[in-house]
Length: 321
Image 1 (cartoon, rainbow, N blue to C red):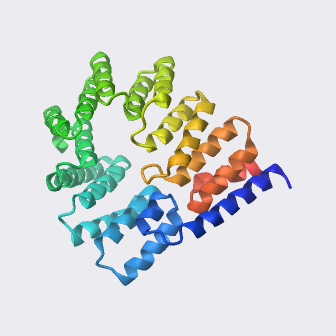
Image 2: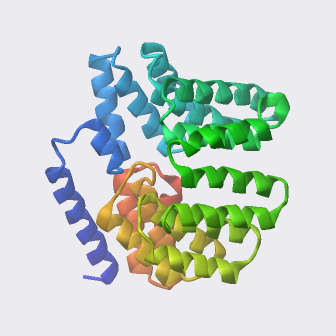
């Protein structure tokens, strides 16, 4: 048996064992595990039997969101909000869907969607002021959006002070992003390092420094930040996938990127970094290093989780023909 066929056979066996082991999972657990096709099938079946279950609609929205299918995601997120308008997380996810659609819309549509993003994020924070994700998303909106759409520095600073009550380190992330918006790299860098200090050197803080250094095209220093990240306490495992993606995009330290993804699969996966995308990224890294059988196995693993993921379909064809 060729190395390629052997690796694909092994990935099929692993998938079979996984499906058996996780047969009793909830839809939320299936989604978090990255089995997007299974999650969508199960959720559609459950919603047909329980159409007024807001949580099921929210989960189905998030499954389509993971596939970048925001047109399909939107009605389910809107339904979840309509069924349970006092749930802040439902407003947060609807705002995220609107935000993704706004990023890809023409100017007039984007302006209309941006107003919806702000309304949903503000409502999410109003309903649950201790939701750090909602606070951060709203802060980022205030930083990025022009004043005519409800953004603004003073709003972002007020939000940062609110974040400080939940996570003092993250307050400085907001100040750093504001400084970047004003092209003040020196202040931004100081604030990012304040973030590192107050987080006790957490990997997520080092990731944000690395992303900043990449935007500044200071790639040697970015490499050092990524090395610090690899040795730092890990509060969020999805940061490993983002770090691997950063190295892949910049064409640097592929073996370290592979190591990050191996670590991710050892402790994850999580919904914030869908497993099918992590497998695809690992395939890309292995392909770049000349390991076509390994890449093919990873692309195949990706498609076992999300069979219509076109990037993995094309990549698998590329390395097997």
